[in-house]
Image (cartoon, rainbow, N blue to C red; front, side, top):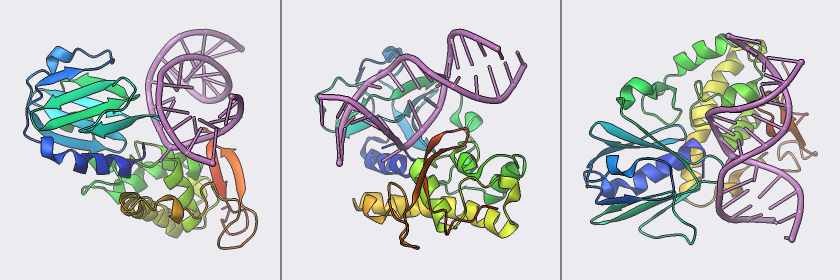
Amino acid sequence: MPEGPSIVILREEVQSFKGKKIISVSGNSKIDYEQLQNKTIIDFKSWGKHFLVCCKGITLRVHFMLFGSYRINEKKEAPARLSLQFKNGEINFYACSIKIFTEDPNEIYDWSADVMSDTWNASKAKKKLKEVPDTLVADALLDQHIFSGVGNIIKNEVLWRIKVHPKTKVGELPTKKLNELIKEARNYSFDFLKWKKAYVLKKHWCIHTKKVCPRCNIPADKEYVGKTNRRTFFCDNCQVLY
DNA sequence: CCGGTTGTTCAGCG
DNA sequence: GCGCTGAACAACCG
């Protein structure tokens, strides 16, 4: 569920509730449900892995973490963390983190840091990367302030595609590779979106969870890399350590 | 049936 | 105040 493109899919799936009034709210989250009662949805937004339900003066933030899920116009067996009821249907969220805030989302979020956004700004990402030369590329890709929406799968696939070893430091990357990293973070995310929608995402994984590098036909490597210490799949043969 | 994970925050410690 | 570690959360797949 959690990487950025999946949240874009969710946003598209709830469009029928845009402009609709929340006629009842419930769930096992710790938020104050009264605040949302009878509010009208102005817009659904997303910033990376954050899903936002925007109403006048109040915004609901849903983060699915590792295990979160949702159902539209149906329920799971498990109790909902949050359930939003409308005249024309319902949205149910499970096992996710829910927060409410009253600030203007435009003041809180830098939309241009979201790799899925129309306003994604590659130059800003490059500037941020220049500020962290000692960070491993594997960690940099997971930094939500630089590449909001990128998750572990995208990280592994991007580095394989551009033939860069996950333990390369950002500052050691040749300019050409740095540019490729930024470009491919967005590009692969859109491939992820396309494949996820068609239910063929896994089929297209080249290195993530793979035991063999499809380019070299030799055993792939699996290590827990960097400060993020996340599962990293790579090919020691074709992914260059700069 | 247990182990592992598409993620993040926070407490505790040195 | 800092970085680092581990816990907590809690669902589903293989």
